[in-house]
Figure 1: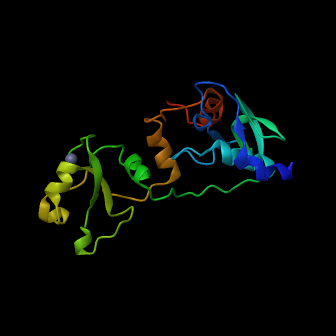
Figure 2 (figure 1 turned 120 degrees about the horizontal axis):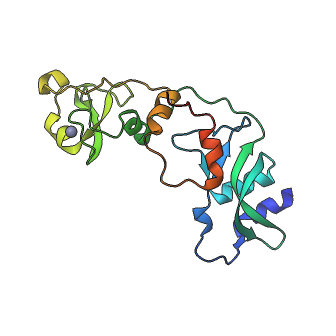
Length: 199
Ligand SMILES: [Zn+2]
């Protein structure tokens, strides 16, 4: 199957109207069948998924109905893959725009608004503030503008919660309030089997 790898780029897509392959990402599970990451959800494009299949790095757990083919092979697009080798998940999530919003539950830390969210540096950059978990909070544009180049004490604006470095588990807890917009039905078992039951 290795020889087919070079052809992945030339693959032609079966005419199955209305569903584009781009709408068919694969959920990537670790070797223990837990999603590789939750936030953002570990999804691969169909091209990356097929490459990984040919490179023998993954097992196909579940498929879409959609197929793609090249002159020498035909394959159904995988909807769920599991890695053959276990990857140790990092305890601390990446410092990303999405993860900061998720930590702060998509609300302005000064007024609680969910509109026009942006970021605020607690200690402004002009005063030596760094762009890190512990100095950046979600803030609406209004509050961000109002606070301007002032420290919290000078602006008399304090965040509802002082910024902190979250664990993957912190984000997981918050993320359950914000389910992803798009979940293929074959993902459901893998996304929810390990979630904690509500008391
Ligand atoms: Zn605000």
